[in-house]
Length: 291
Ligand SMILES: [Zn+2]
Image (cartoon, rainbow, N blue to C red; front, side):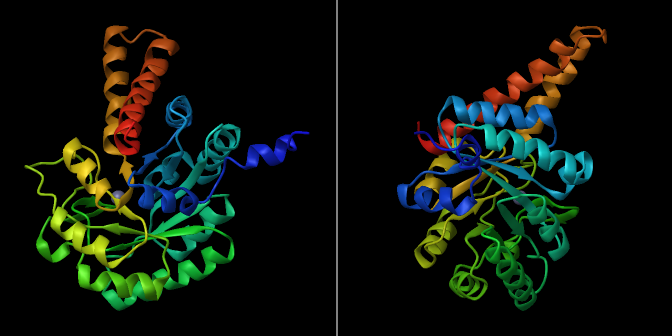
């Protein structure tokens, strides 16, 4: 006899650790894609299903504020439960304990607390508090040490050595906070690069030697594929994609609108951006999963 359909459908909504631990030991990475509306969720889930790969749907404060947390979490959970592949729903760059709790109560299976702008001891204390609450609910937690370049939730971070993760600090940070995944600042930037990227694989190697937990690459958009592949071999188990996905969607939307001469045309204006987004997600998953 088969499983209860409801139970079976819930199996697809999983915590992030279930995907990332095997990814780190297997030398591949899981894609984490920012979603902000129905079409973006459909594009990401369809791409992952087509390739039979697990996937992470990420929602950050901007996306939650844009769509409304009720709306976007319901859309994401509906599609995650219906998916034939494991899906995690993750809060990207959670800024406060309250935001983390709201997302957990809305059904997220994973959260990030990013208070890396605070002094080290305060980052440890705040992250620890979130981990304790989240782990009690079976939710995995991503923390961040160092500042990732580009624009980080309203704060501009220059890509300066002083902001990069300090490998010697990482074992203590992981041990103290008990986080499940660590976002590392190794020279990638949020948004597209404004100058030649300087990805510090040497730093990543030093971090990976010191901590066994899955490592996370933020600012994946526009990072050359060769660097991404090498970073994955060195311990990156989750790669975030936001800007490139939004651009694939928005550029197609703008072009279609122009081509249709701003006439009423839902399939043209809304379906094609979803197709473009799905294609981008497929390319990224193939790269991350080494397909
Ligand atoms: Zn990020």
